Picture 1 (cartoon, rainbow, N blue to C red):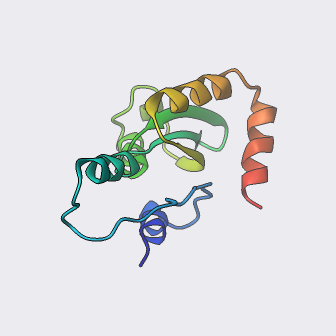
Picture 2 (picture 1 turned 90 degrees about the vertical axis):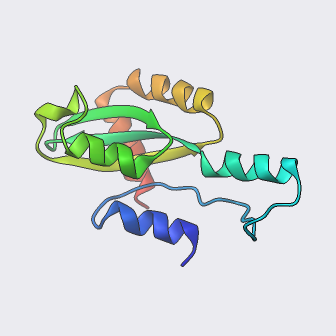
Length: 126
């Protein structure tokens, strides 16, 4: 199973997620150069900007470097804002190489209207 298939299967069924697969896959467990090890680390710690739909009406926008763990935190009431919601679904996600770019996109999403977020989510489903 490829890494992207494993990632998508771990999120659960019925979740619409826009995911950009890793472009480069390094083989072997013992990289030969520091540059190669650094490249592997950067690929393993990609950042994501994501949108949750809470109780079928409220959008929550956030960033993380571990979507699966963060989604679990939201669903297990470990997030201040989302702990009041019982139904939390991941409806959109974008991947970035660094935290700064993910944070910029998060800020952009937070400035959008509900209608504009819905259009983005619906476009990602096709």
